Length: 220
Image (cartoon, rainbow, N blue to C red; front, side, top):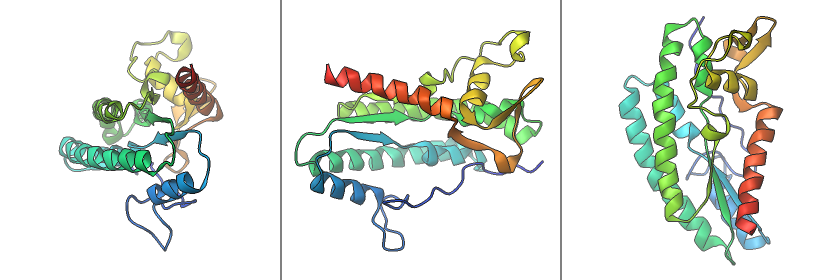
């Protein structure tokens, strides 16, 4: 089984996925967001970023050095983004943010040693990302939804035999993302080409509830 980075290239929609450059004449997401703030009555800004900054580090020759370097870059970029969005709104606009969950927990089920090795490394990098991003968001008084907390990503207590005997966080990531498939004997890791780090409908619903709860707190 070949080890392949399961993060696909994101599609270009209203703005390029590249920050801060333009691609094929399409403005960056930040430029597109500022334009929307200037031309529309925007009631809420939501931000979800950071995953693509560090998750590829698991495939780097020196993962720890990669995470450190990219988190430093994330601080600079995120500070620029928040400053630009705050100054770009014609009226104060509430901002909420999400820091990513850890889809690589699913590699606990892999029979490929390189993928299995990503599990502890990904936990450390996800925690580092959450800590770093949350610190930046707090400087701008931006409340945060932790995808890691929503999916109970640090709970590695072993489930009962009925639930496969796998750690709770692995079971949750299999249930709430497209990394695994459910069989009669329990969850198994999908073949490489079918793995999807993004949430399932149930996962999106769970994250959505957490976002709505955060918005309710803002409106209180």
